[in-house]
Image (cartoon, rainbow, N blue to C red; front, side):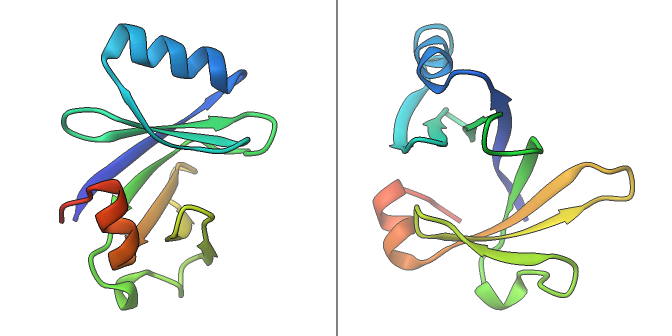
Length: 112
């Protein structure tokens, strides 16, 4: 498994997006009213609105849909075409196991 993204809670998506573009060279690859996906050289930063989400999290890439640990957490089909399974680790940190369907992988340039 590899890290797919780090999701951080932000107050204002527009302000945060501009900051990451200007100061980190991040490139916007997906956006909606609750979420921005920013591509970096070695990973992705997900800016998630504090007004819609409770937890920051790390996203771990799962290559096969059947490997999502649905016995440990709830499957969520995201609006960007990914499927996630959110699980709390023993210390209360949120981990998202994430799977991309082929169309989504191609659109976002995801390599496994």
